Length: 355
Image (tube, rainbow, N blue to C red; front, top):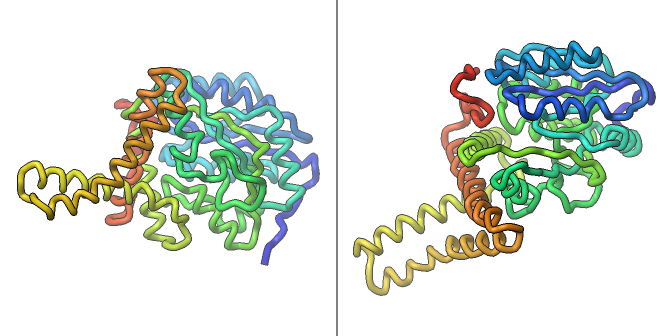
């Protein structure tokens, strides 16, 4: 049975919550787009500050001193779900708008989200993540993010019609429902939004996708950071499969299948080159190379079509396999042994203390 989420008074107010860790280059613009949101009633922005080492904390303090709508809470553990729960518990208003310090809200985002929440009586509504980039590498990653070829076709990567959703990107949420289902699970370091939305849906509430909502997202700035991010994310998805099994979408199993296919192809190639496997048997087994060959051709074709410049095409040909294979390898690790204390270190530098 579907349960309608409560609808607060139009002027009841909104609390924006933002986990922050090593975001000096992005934080000020992210905060600016939040404070520019036009909403009825009071609004506040709570920054949950992790132990940054790049001057982010000092920047956040300057921003807070300049605008009374900004409040700060400490998040010494650095974990995202912990940061979100700290901010939600400190919130003064009945609607929670999750914001990423690496993102920018489009004008009118919050007003549209509140209207959609009221209209469909949803507990959580999210929109489209529109990745963008400032460098050739980051722009190539953005192209991959914005295509089903990169992240597997989740609704919030565009192209899906408005309607019920499995999860929501960031999310505009009713605080009473969050409290009812127990807030974010602090034992999950990645994929915490999917797991929360699973509990929201199991409680009977709607999670809704509205393609008219848009958030600009800035991907990782280097190949190494991108790879670390995707290994950690894949590992935690593997952990979620261990915990929740069939409730995970089948699309999550494509990258690990690709890793298995690559591994089998490489092993067979070594056996063929060394003569360990030869003759007709080797020829028959060569069919194992076919999925990898088709994948490589697909990556090259997508890169040639989607890339606007030679640099973008070259980076796309490197970025797509990195995303798929890093995520898939992490997934297999997570499924086989669990995520344990796996941390996404892609936002950290050598001076940042690990939680």
